[in-house]
Image (tube, rainbow, N blue to C red; front, side, top):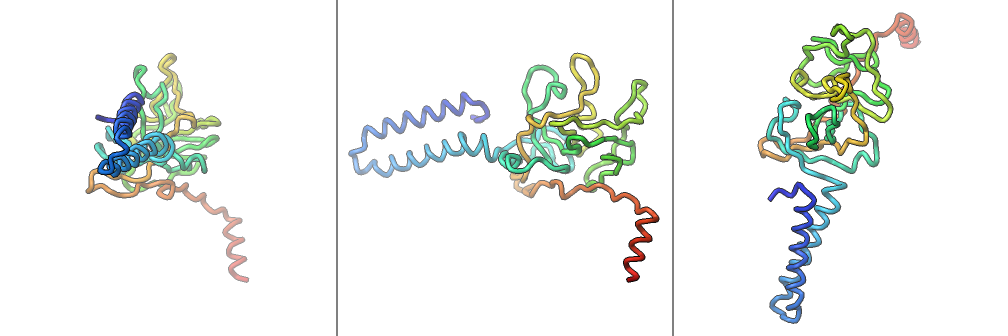
Length: 250
């Protein structure tokens, strides 16, 4: 039984509690004392895992699609730290799991997505075909497993590359899959009612940060994060170069 719904967890807790009561009726039997203690320990451990650790600390997730290849492969199982963002906000480059917004899914079904966080609140975003992603006018340098995009974004009303970058709203993020050219992510999301672009992900939907692949055994490894990405350094101006040379000659 997959414990992926609240009623299943509650049912199992109730069953364990009932077993504990039945065993408790036989407390005076010395031969059963060890069994009672073992059941107590198991019940406490179960409650800690499913009522404390799973909702608030760490949770396992399954990767169902190719949108994050070659970083995360279809069938990978990952552990997600759900506590870390209570201490520090997400950073550009983190791989995050989140509740998919309505513009990302068809129908009322709730789904969890995993993508890489590209834009922070206030960032300006542009995607240039064959070049990469630009954040605040600077190209984002990414790991080699991330393919270059074969599209431009955002587009104007004539479906041509817009001269105006997209600015991430306050309290929101912009996310892309590492498999840039097939991923259903911020650059594809549209309002289901108006059909207009709705690229942002509300910060309140972020569940946690992907930390490690734990299955299959051949794939066990840490998941990359913000240290895999950085913004390209702006070209040095003539004035700054002269200043450095003057300082070096002292």
